Length: 168
Image (tube, rainbow, N blue to C red; front, side, top):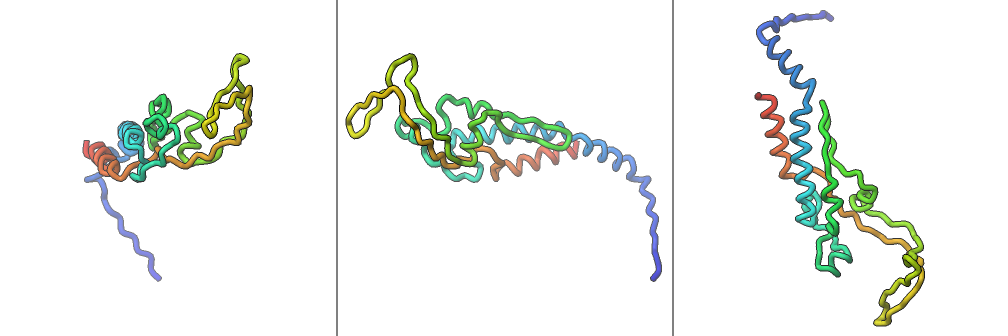
């Protein structure tokens, strides 16, 4: 079998190839823009009460009882969404320890709930008010309510950000 070799003179496009290589070496500008876009999209998930796939979250007991929004009590989780863009990556997330159980679902640990300052706990069962200094809480099952992720409608905007960067 014969070996064939064809040499191509790339000098007419060498400058363009070098420029492209420089642009691709540091994508921090568009990655930051993508992070900002997706962070806003994630915050919008809280307003919509749905995950990035559009599926509505199961209403929380607190939201039903208080006629509020699921995953939005103090707004701390929603406002903790941040992003960080780098040369070849973007990270969107939160540093709150309880965020994972809401994103993926899970079970909280059983624990003892004690009254503060020597007072008593008061709760109603079957129409009767009960007073206790402490109660054993068995833990709670928390369904997954995914809030982090890229929504389908984000992809064309991400593509536009990258295209604009490459065409600049």
